[in-house]
Image (cartoon, rainbow, N blue to C red; front, side, top):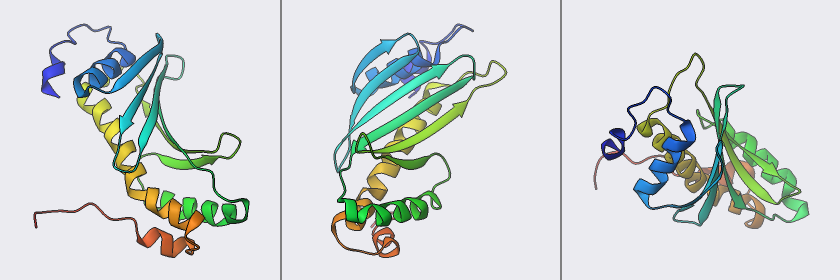
Length: 167
């Protein structure tokens, strides 16, 4: 991400401007919805994820929401919610919720930038990558819990931990 660092020399850096530069750097499709909001599409292994980042100056929070479609059978909702609880116990930054009316699985994270703190491109890139990594890691678990008749704990077993080293 060092390539985009030199574009931000001002003390008045808007977090969404940085998000836009990160999206441009990675060649992700994006749309600047307002001065304080950007939407983008990021291709993963399992699917394309919809990402929205929004800046709240009042709260001093950069909010990231990453979504993907999920339309589980009604009789498997309890298993999905139990799986969500188990999954959220495994993550440190952010968490999943299921928005039933929209039929969306959602990863949410808020980066607090109080006291006039500024997020750098590496930090925003990490935020986005962490959301995609979490969605990719736990997508199979949600699928197994909803359509594979697996118990929530068995569904969670499929979520692979990060690999270290080389094979």
